[in-house]
Length: 520
Image 1 (cartoon, rainbow, N blue to C red):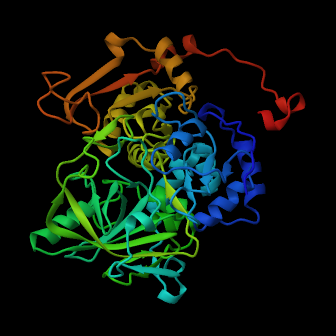
Image 2 (image 1 turned 90 degrees about the vertical axis):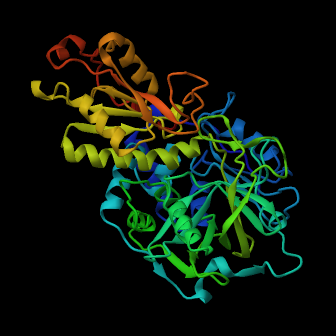
Image 3 (image 1 turned 60 degrees about the vertical axis):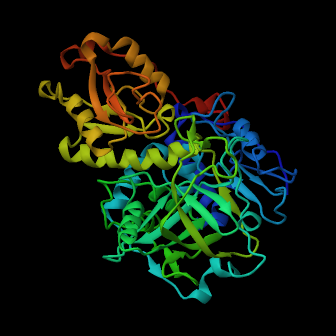
């Protein structure tokens, strides 16, 4: 089962639409991605995109420690890099339960899996929201996720034995489910929503769930249920079509309350996502998932997140730091775990490039949607860069074509902050700068930016609570935790000086005459 593929990887600055299209087309002729297994099959057909290993691996810190070197990237502490996904086929304590990590930890790989040029993924996601395909419910007997059933009433039932959930570091509060698609419904309207939350296995049949206040619809659904003293039924689907994982990361205002993000996933595939009725709770789950956890979020019951480890830490989060353990989190009381035969667990490293893909690409779509309405034809692309974990940084490629465009680029940045409130820094660049290449962005900042006139600070604005600099301890002028000074870095050339800043023009040739295409 093991093999050693070519580990050569491409940085974002090296995306080539031509080379991507030819490889993607050849790889996808016989492989249509519709679930995790077909996604892995596609990656096996593309050199350098998947490693499989039979070497025994401890899920408690070791698995993530290995992948940190292979392909984590993102804001993970160096040494790390962007590389292939990895399938661990011999996980200690979990025979016959492989774990895959890093499936989406490369923008190029996301392009393969969604059948799209990596530089156009934001546009693909934008169109998917605009043309939703609602999910459908299939009969239980046709749902692969219910091929094997484990009920919590069984005396041998134990989440820690059934779910090979890793810890990212030895300091984690416990084993975490990092890529569970949480599906729940508004108890008043019946409208459903799918999101991803960090969930820590606390006991044989309990999970803690972190619901950031005001940021996710399922948190609101829980509040409505709890106000009536009722539990909120929930399903957690693990190991699904990558289109679902990406679409589930959309946020308001792009997907407002009542918009089921599974509709966007259906639009990406031009086929509805298939759901199935759960066996023990009144909710639905993703029918092709590898694992489904069925349960209820209990009303007025809380737990300390690190009650089993006492480390004071939760797990590594996308800014690159370990998040503090929450002292009071809601509990999911698990009723059942259903799986496919020989299920495959999927996980991710919190600060990795995988988070950049899942959080950043939907954010790009949200910003593109708003800016195209305000300034049609002016915004050429948007990139939510890796250093910001897909949330804190956006690079906007803005094209000024007439004198009156001067200043509109800064208004576009302000609109981007409105489209996605968790943004901290927006970099504005001209159309001759590759917004996906941060070296090119830094070049523009070095040669087209003067801090005294091109830096626009926006102090006292709500941002993201996981940024440790957004705190009175860092700056006494900050009123409370989570308040930040956002900033616009205008690295565009003044319209009347464009000729003075023209880049050197090289001969346009096809290098394939001299260099093998595999090296380009």
